[in-house]
Length: 619
Image (cartoon, rainbow, N blue to C red; front, side, top):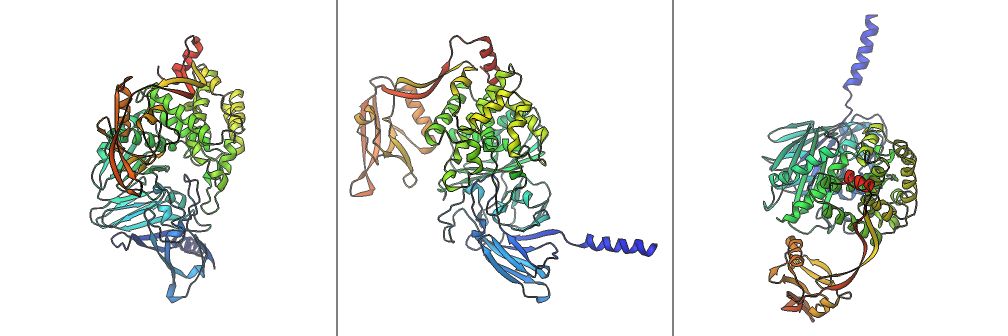
């Protein structure tokens, strides 16, 4: 009997001794042309052959990027000198055998921020918040999915990352299992899904923390010219985070959260700035300038990304819960993950009094205008979501931040109207998160029915007709429920700056007139021309970081008949890189403008309309 027990213990012991973990080693003290080397000791393998994979796509990007493009010198060494056969199957996949004899896997990784000389990297630029940047002895911004791979079928194993780092560097991340050393750090995650969900930013730290309810919020800021600090961001976000806590009922569903900000002092390859959300963190690439307009931009973008702790972290379909990094399937409900998140980001601010109702409605109506002017307003939103990776449909994706947010607004108003102000989308999100949660996914086809069970038949009908169907949103009906009149067209007389189509010249750092074909009477009186670069408005320099303030001040002060002077740089006909500086002037006049989709408060609102409005936004 003792021998049998001992035999069982020995068998158990041998299985316990088997290494089930991926061990990665990364040396950040040795960088060659924005390239770092990675060494992997894989988990113990019994298979004869494996496929080692880098992601084609990760959640939140909605675009296939093929991160294997940035991997080079991929090599595999065998135990006891055994030769290992490696075959590159495609840009992201390597077939390796015999797998049971693998000792180490090594490869080099190029960063994505400024790399265009690798195959296909110039044609498909990775949006910077989803990429990686290596600046020796300055900053390492690491989106883990762009550096680390996994073995097909074994993504559920533990991952341990050991970083050798420059002196004084610190890893800012949403991860909690971290061992900090003087020259080395060790970070551990549960599986590849957690790893790909956890960006890391290494640099000499500029960090601040805010306690929001039961959640420790880390704010990490890298500003190469020291224009912006973590303390500045913390002061900018503090009230917002408290507002979001209150919006979610006083508690946040995470214990730790990290905002990772990289402020860039040069143009991005993608031509864009923004952020990528993760379950416990968000990574931002934003322009490095100091301006009051930057504050609101930080608030708006951060509010959106932070609210992803609700969707899709706690409310998501199986396509997200069981995300396939190399053969991704899309969920039908981007209106929920991105649209509702964008709606909540702005609604929380007006509910808390951080912005007023006029600012809020201006944002929402601009989103509605953008959605009908720039996208197919009769395309089913669920169809678009399901097929968003297809080239012909992908052009509609950005509508999730426009019409998607307006869908959230309409749904919230409808719910409050039907419930006499007692129930809105805040309540709905909480109920859905309770029904599902981080570890329980819903079926795409069931979501509308589930929402209808929590709410009303009219809500199910709205979702099927206007989100799942092709019928445009019933704006007049929905806004009328909160005493707001909606008009498709309104004639107004307003001051303008000539109505030029403007763009930005990154070389001269000036706004320029890209198209002058739609100039109004005032623009023609000024004599504006295509190519003109705007320098000063009534003596005030029009800097890109202050353009909203300068133009806003103009509209606040201008009166009929005032002399308006714009100093411009006009390209010389034979050489567009040389300019002639001159001034153009005209007398201010109001121009007849036909504006679409205008709103205003009803004069004879009912008590019910007033009550629904009050439950929706402070007024």
